[in-house]
Length: 267
Image (cartoon, rainbow, N blue to C red; front, side):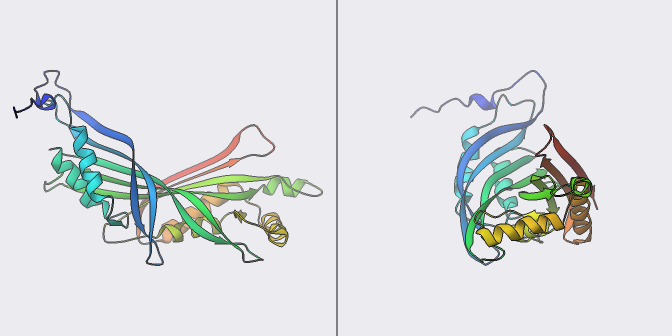
């Protein structure tokens, strides 16, 4: 068979180093180790990119898929992704790369009174960033992201109303970065976030559970500012966390806008 021409490696004269080039929305099965020592297989969407030197015409898209396929059956704690990303960067002859995996993670929830079990999904992400690969200045960062739906009840509405108060679903988005030899369980991060809301959300509630959740929210009113500050204080105390982002958005039930708060900190 004749040797086929490698168009991607042809010289490009425009002199532009491309910061990120690769593939996105590539679906793969992913094994994630759970806190209870079992594995959960999830359907993940991968966005993986590398830098491209100015003298190359293009990157080799098939090589991204080759490496992801090799790694898809390995147990992942999140920070283990450095090996996968390093393999991608090396195979593509790049200096830097980024790998983001987004997926839904399922956790069993117990109704607060009846104790009935149901399964709830949470949007999660693993994001790995590798810079200056295979040099003395090599730097790696891993970011765990979760989006947690909760209930918020407005303190102002409760204060000024003779009875009742407006409440709504809110999404608390948290991203935390920590060292490769350290770990934060998805379950623990979600539980911490839910604890600072007016009330957690459950897939299955009987009447006695609904009464409990409704009254708990009423007794625990929270602005988005309250939730954000409480989560920030908790993350500041967590010695494993090196940097974090917190975003709180409440889809207001009596307004045509959302209430929103955001904080990013590096320790």
